[in-house]
Length: 76
Image (cartoon, rainbow, N blue to C red; front, side):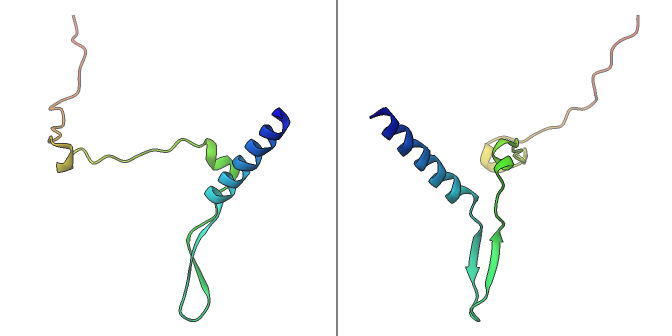
């Protein structure tokens, strides 16, 4: 029974990976295909993603004010 559940889990994981890595394409009027998003690789699963945040975005509900000057260590 546990072997069956493991096989089902592996099959589900493979199906999810295949759906995630598949390229997104659009069919043109002349019958050709255009790639919207290229195929992903297995190594892309382990890359860190960086999100760019606009700190002046009004949806955040605050305005970002840059610091006036950098911190400078005082000399004695």
